[in-house]
Length: 434
Image: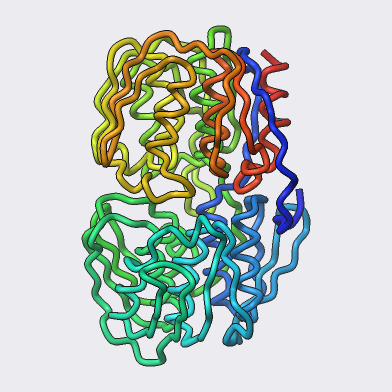
């Protein structure tokens, strides 16, 4: 793989076949960590090596943004070297494409580095809220004008930070990261409270690079920026591994090993929920790489039972809720998921998308404003076509459902390239190895 591609492939339908998964799987570098590593590396005037970056289209948006602001990024396969230092105002509109991570977090960089930029994105990103991060960065001292709370947005950073202590109105790793980026690029101390355990990749990377930072599930205090920029190896993307974990769990005859996956506790709510449901999952060779916890994940088929998935677990599994719902479809009894309201404002309305996906296999999923009630049983499909609405996670969740329930067709396999361009080939290889 090489630098993330800007061109989107032509849409063609794809049928996922049923069948067990086996063998050894490697997933691409973590998308969330990749965004953060690229942006934080741009605060260094020296070259920073980053290995195993996510090759998806969302990362192309971040590379695009950083280059527009004057950073240099040199690629070698899935590795890159980033040099920042003397950043500049963006001369043209920065196209954030479909990446909310890019739009929200690059706003924090611009705010702290005293840069001007106009941000925009595709039709899907233009529907997603930007005011939560804009309001916090205005308090920091930046001037930000959104379009009815969404993109396009105009941002003008500040050389004189105002507020340095922030309370998150709702748990958000992207807003938290935007504030920390503002602190790093302005060299101002920043305190963020009100979090409830959202993913802490930014904090871990800053600590790995020698920043004076303390953090727990509810509070982050950044006192000074990084002192050094050691090479970074990005852990395997747990969200990508999740589809293989669930498919192996629900499909008889499956037994797989996923190598080098990130198992950061702020991201592994899916594992906790599946184990409570009765899944056979174990971790081997747990270790730390570049500040992140990494392990091999071993999964075998197991019968499941319905459980209650509360707000804290849902927060640590927010990107995995679509495929957790697939597991719930195969479980005996009901599974209740609450605290997942943020899914209403992702690439699609993922709560509604989950209900439609499970209905295609004859499973009833009652949707509420912030969650789902899924009545599990014996999902069976008749080759239905799933409308993904351009959402990569819906597309890959369909593969996991098809593995145990029967063939399913998705209308837009090109959407998968947002996070996992090689997913289809990796999936087919895992089924062939069973």
